Image (cartoon, rainbow, N blue to C red):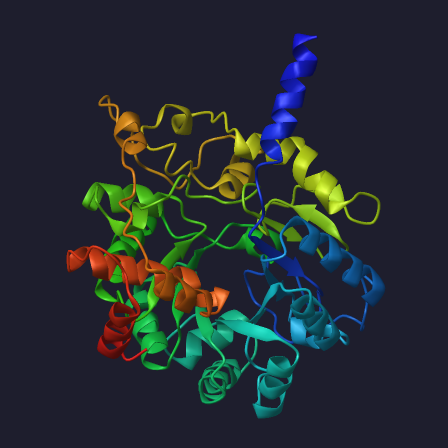
Length: 420
């Protein structure tokens, strides 16, 4: 009887988790041949390995049922090569989801940008891996790719469609990160996401940066986030150790406000493959359910893998680490290295200290500054693609100015100061 009660409580606990971000590889088709592609995408026949339009729409309905305000990232491959992509963008947008596309940017001309806007796309993520064409074109497998991608940034800016730059870090470009961030800022990007390679797909044969280079780059990114505050959001992705380093540099860092974990796989995020399988993230090939024979709600609430990620029992150094509640390591990297989703992250060189910081992290509660009703209403009108960044920026500004509340006047003042 006790076992049944425990199982019931576990399922009840899992029902309290709501996905706020979904990444969907709607196609394997791609016009590039990127060295690191986890999907091993290529120029396939139209529709090969893809779900039919009717099935895709059914899945969109199921996503909406789980969270009607979720952000849905349509990616690939190259999502714009799928024949019915506009229909899917429009359908998801019509359901109230925040529609974003992840693209290599080479197909975004004036006509295409107008079309995706018309079909409800609210934001675009564009991949740039160098401040110049030589390395980018080699890495992406197409001569002229950098020029096409950077030109697409100008087009997006001209049409007022928010975009962010995605960077994949390798041993050949990690020293370029400051230049790429500056380039992204000067060319109108709202955010710069720096992704750290997890060796899956075609990337299995690639050599990672060293743990020392990883630590060095994350330390720089913590500084860059502060330097670019109010200008462009800078974030490390697939790098939970970013939060450990932020805490070490400044225990009061705004980056830690409200943060409970460095990895959102299985807690607020999951991925859908072109075939309709669900995995915790793009870099974890672990199939935890198929949407062809199981409902998304059932997979989300009953998957043992998701339950494990929500109630982690780490092994190795991650188990004893004083930062495992705020960091937890990259589960995809642990899985790739140890075949154990709860194993230790091999990229982390941090040795747990005897001094226990866990209670300190538990006691680190975010300070909240109240918003007036009018300010809250204005915030609600900000696109979800940007709302988190805007809210955080305003609260930091108010805290620095020792303000007691956030008003429309404060919002206007900060907007004027940043030119946004």
